[in-house]
Length: 305
Image 1: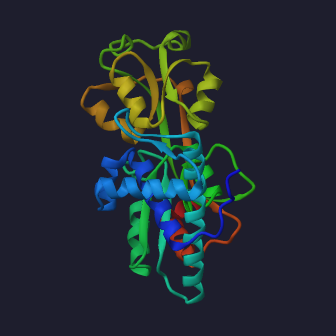
Image 2: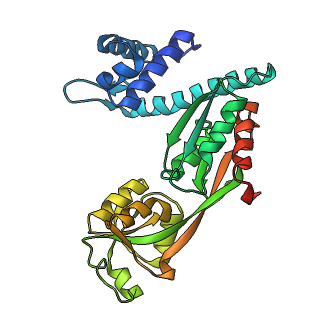
Image 3: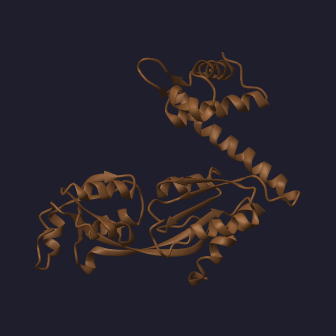
């Protein structure tokens, strides 16, 4: 029977950070640059961690790199642990009235081309108040943002709202208009007469593969979904292939339409509006570092006050 893990030391935390970097990069060679240490040293640290935990965390060698089932569980647990350590550090800085530390912000993709989205301005304002903060920005699917905020991996998430959690607070920010598009080589691209719902329902449709407003609308309209993507760039790629129709934000699709690579399928039944919101955990209360960023977001989206 293997001994249970005792107290964690600073050395253990360092080994976990190395392991997470390797897992995040997808291998030892790819992690060399991020960690700034040699591959043989990384390999030795991974082995030390495996001995310490009494587990095989990953397969590495000629067959490539892959986490074991135990390694995946340790990776998720380490994420929660390191997030808790960072929360503790930020809470201590709060006690000292110091705006230092780090903040992790998760954002749904393709918001930067939305003129109604002023996240970049909020970040600029935030840095005037907290110039020493280290900012981590993650572009993540909606479901992973919600989960990450709930488990403390991200302090703030910015998503299109589609359901609410009693464990989260929401601040309305901005919206975006979604339209249905087809690519230049798609049969509907050259049609000038009105397109019936029956015709649209027969087309091969590409949608997002996680619970979101896109998935809700897909089900409501009974579209012929035959392809998935985990972000909107994937949807755009499938549309440009000419083999699929799909929804995109109007601000993101504008350049494709202007270049003649895409065309909006005009039909009021096949469009919808997304309201975006910032979300954060109700408990524990956000630190001053997080509160200042939330205040900056609210101030830059005053039409939703």
